[in-house]
Image 1 (cartoon, rainbow, N blue to C red):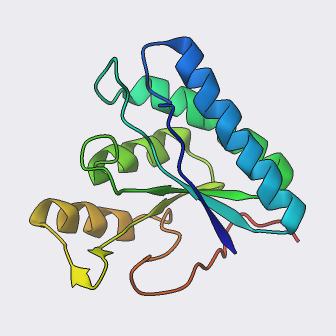
Image 2 (cartoon, helix red, strand yellow):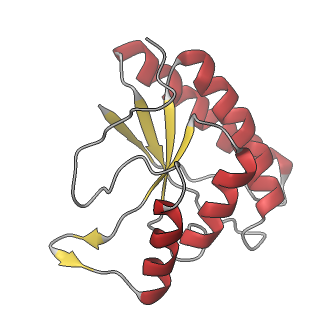
Length: 151
C-alpha cells in the first residue's frame, strides 16, 4: 500500500516555521503508514507562497523526513504533479542530494486517461531511469518497493 500524502506547507519556504510544519505533517503520515503496515507514502512538494523552489531548503527538510521514515521502515516517494514546485529535474536534484535509498521519485506520466509526457518530462524520466531512484511508473504499474525495505 502506498499512502497518498498531499500537504499544504512547503519544505522550501523561506519561513522556517512553514518548513517545520511540512516536516511535522510528513512525519504524522509516516507514523500512520507504519501503524497500518504500509511500505510507503507518496507525497507532494507544495509551492511556497514566499519563494521559488529552493534546493537547499527542500533537501534539508526531506533529509529529516527520510531519516524518520527509515526508522519507521517506510519509503518516501516524491510525486511530480506541480510543474513548478515538482519539476522533474528539480526532483532529480533533490533525490540525488538527499542520497538515501528511503527516498524515491514517483514519475507520473499521465493524468486521467490522457498520456501527457512533454519533451521536458521525457528528458527527466530518461535521466531517472538511468538512476536507481525510481519507485514506480504511477500510470502503468502498482507500487513496488524493492529497495530499502527492512524485513
